[in-house]
Image (cartoon, rainbow, N blue to C red; front, side, top):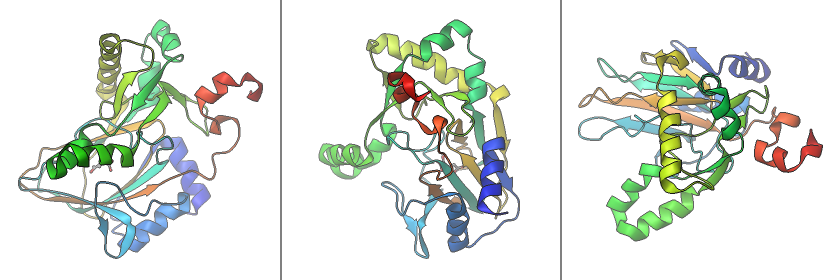
Length: 266
Ligand SMILES: O=C(O)CCC(=O)C(=O)O
């Protein structure tokens, strides 16, 4: 499948699963590159010695997995990665599934009145509990540096998919901190309601990993949650982040907050 076909399938289905792919780290990186430029490092995780674009996610023993929270990847960046490619290297004897939620489906499930209020709102995203590791390693100075390096971003609460134009709910329990213009309690009440909406199984798909199976997801309009139910067994995953989508051009490639300020663009 060439890059264009892969991209079409990804935009249509949002999450693609390939059984028994068993790609070497360099092949995984090449697969990511069919979709766009890939990231060469990560501010928290280590990378594979054979391919610096391959992040190694390894958990087990007393090391607690950190992705058992609904999130889209790295929305604390103003331009979060567009897609991720994830392959299972070591799977535990049971558990360790990953769930994805369709955030357009979550958005459509909200009452119409609430949806029309949400489209006016923006929210602040930061690295959330990722900062704990920096604090434990180096105290408040290290945490401050980590926060600066990871960055903070403001995104519309309702974003639009840059290819399909479909609206989707764009806040996550991991990274969305508060809503611009609302008091802390007002914002917290609203965000709790939105975070809870993601948890309905009706919006979700769940994958049980086998060694060498692979998932690709569109980070725009999906969120995911990696179950942390397998300790003390080991689970090792290889991940490639595709930083941007060269095929996303045209009207829907424009951030919806900018569109609101520039109606002439429509
Ligand atoms: O390990 C997984 O299943 C998902 C990891 C994750 O949350 C991520 O790559 O952002």
